[in-house]
Image (cartoon, helix red, strand yellow):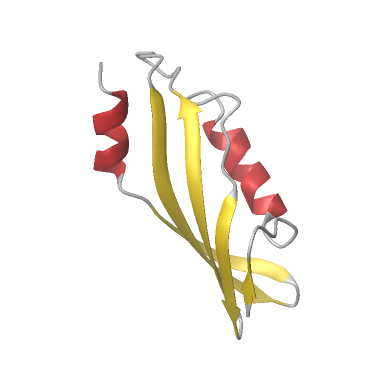
Length: 95
């Protein structure tokens, strides 16, 4: 089952990520581009965009892809795996 631009299923997951990373990229955007579900698994593809204000703050804009794989049981997320190219991010925000 595909869900394009559907935020309802992953809204709580996005909020958790937002709170944990907001000191590095405050006010970032991370819209869901594509979502696929099969059985107890949900895969979501995001594009992350934000300005780096971490330590040391570079003020540089970053844009990268992020993939999240969730396992659902009894309507709850019981497992989450995130996949991102950290070297791409570092290359973009490097001073």
